[in-house]
Amino acid sequence: MNYEIVEIREGTWRIEDGGVRFFLLAGQEKALLIDSGMNVHNAKELAEGLTELPLELLNTHADRDHIGSNAEFERFYMHPDEEPLCRRNGLKGELLPLRDGDRLELGERPLRIFHLPGHTPGSIAVLDEKNRVLISGDPIQRHGRIYLFGGHRDLRTYVRSLERLEGCTGLFDEIWPSHAELPLEPSILPRLREGAQAVLDGKLPGTPTELHGCPIAAHDLGFCTLLCDR
Image (cartoon, rainbow, N blue to C red; front, side):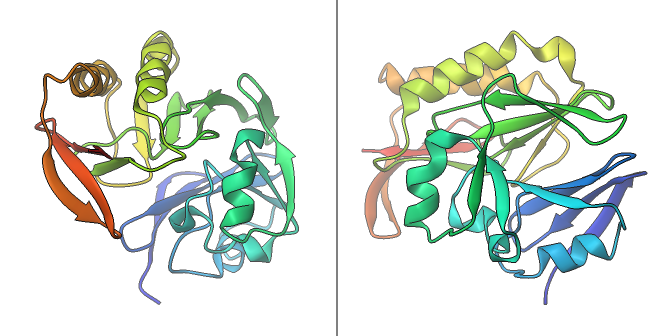
């Protein structure tokens, strides 16, 4: 199996899984797996090899490259707006709802949830308050491709999510995305928002192409690409 486990700091790991990454956070009382990979289907086993703490799972969203090991878990945290996509992609476990502003406590390691719809209706980010890190899922990337095409994605909502998150940058020093470069500085947020707004306003034409059989437009922002409906 082609994966790499990297300890970022004490009690914090990233698992690089061939184009996507997921995270393990350990507190004093329990541990949380944030997403469950794409190619690996034993993320629980991998996590339990790193910590003996009771383990829970949170999904930033239900795209297939983030739920590869969900079958190992009877339940998982997710925003309820993500449930239709979650079931469409075959997840059978119990969805434990998390909404904007909700908190999880791992034991001297509080986490705060941000709802960031746009990439998917129920996309969420997780703020590790003690370490001032935002684990963002897919909506924030540098030198990657952000999927914003198809029926369950919404570019206008995406812009509003970024705008709201900009107002919270005093809470975190780094952003850890699921794809492409890591870490990112909060200063990437206004650049993403301005680029997405330029696409909406027709000021940044895209290059017609296809992906997964869908006709799309690729809008190059210079530091990442937004893949949108034509």
